[in-house]
Image (cartoon, rainbow, N blue to C red):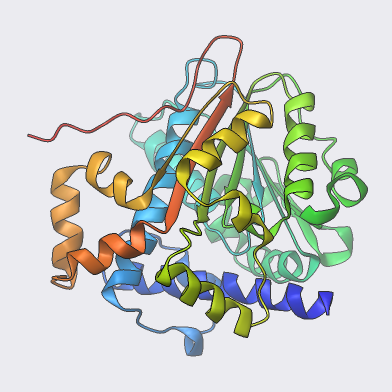
Length: 332
């Protein structure tokens, strides 16, 4: 039964990959690597609501990662990102290639961080194979240092490390593999649709380990919310029919509860908002208009309903008081 559940959860990563490629193919945002983790036969056009939701999810997490890399203690220095349940996420590859272009134009102000991704062994094995075959495209300047590890289920290069591990057994299966991390370096936990698959005890164990291990710690989280309404009930019913359980939803009934949960894990500052709030308060107005015009979306109420059921959160613990706090764009 556990193997069936793991397979179902891995299937959600394929869904996310298809949605990513759909949004990119239609021009919602740029990701030259979106097609590399899917077979051509897997490509499928998603509805406008999903395309916009995928884009906003990507924008929000990209913004938090960018804020982390731009913090005074991080900018121009070594930093670390640990991505939990990363699946086929392409964020490191986009970042590495963007920094190369910035270097070539003399505009680079950010140093590529050490980036560690952790996921089920089946997922990392598949990703390691793809990254190895396309390393010159994906890893940029790291390609020459890349090597396959963990019997084919992992990959390591100067800045990028892909590790097999079960987040539900954090201490038993993962922590011993993280010896390459510097406990004194500023570190970001990235968890995009990951914590919701863990029960409260597993999340607590994982988060408390990070807070005890690293002096300066930040987190960027994206997860669905259970608002206990008709939309949530349909969502949970559809997931259950696919054999997918989300025990973490009990902790994610609203953004405020997610924020309090992060503070309870040892962070000193935190905030959480719905994607609906992110779109209205933290997305540039011109970009908001552009996204609605890509496929001429008219169903704003339906979009708001969808976005209200997903949250993006940040949390910080730094002696300097630095945080990933939101900033609103100019709305003129």
